[in-house]
Picture 1 (cartoon, rainbow, N blue to C red):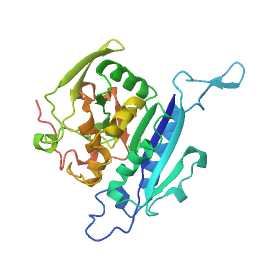
Picture 2: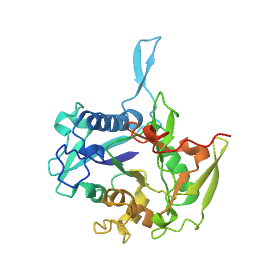
Picture 3: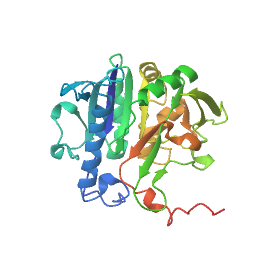
Picture 4: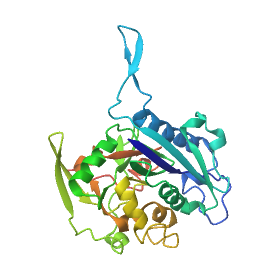
Length: 295
């Protein structure tokens, strides 16, 4: 199996006036959190899905191959724009990633990731887009996606639930992409079309529902789905930024229009998930975000 990841990475500590500095992690003055996020993002892809995994055989004091049935060839493209990035400070072996430089508007960098993936059609088994602050931890991630497409068909896309975690506070873990108001997504998708799927996975019944917030800062398409997406009229529509804003549109609007998008229902949210680095959303619980009512 061959996996290709295109990561949208941007860092600018001196944003232009009116850019609402601080709203996005890429516009804050301290580079350390963004650098830590990108490092974790790239490292996790190789650690959990790459072939360099071993088990320590105690009897022979030998490192032996492990997880080879799940391992893949992993290629990572880090897509940047206008020299605003932290790659020169990235303390990772250079063979773990390739630099894909562009001249795009920073908030539209997701479109450049789409283009980079499409340029490599026919080479990989999975084509993946990620924002640079997302971390995959599940070695069964692509096995679950393959299970889903075998069940629901290539015209359906299962998106992961993004989460944040903390050791203290009101909650230890929060899934941060809850439902949007119906009017936000209604122009682009019909959630009444096959609104729910149920299936068995490891003898557990899963509910997968049409996503009323399909955004996850990422998506993962098998080779057939990537070809389908590249042929769709919504592909690389850089002039269409109607979904929330340019950043969210570049990441999500195209796949929302090209596929029926599902997510695991809240009761089984962790079936397919990706970590959002930090706790910027989780920290809002109890202040900006109200606590659930007490019984």
